[in-house]
Length: 67
Image (cartoon, rainbow, N blue to C red; front, side, top):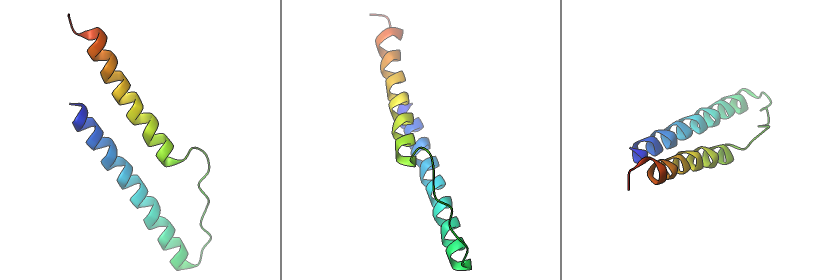
């Protein structure tokens, strides 16, 4: 199940980055200024989400299953 969530998260991240890349490419082709990315970097956001998923999975396995 976690593998499925990881795959979905990675696909969503790749799609998000592809859309950004395509938009920047179009703006450059039109000669318009490209807005800078501000705030948290995308790879940092991805790592936080994956750590949350795997941390939740670990806690679920440690505390949720009878011994």
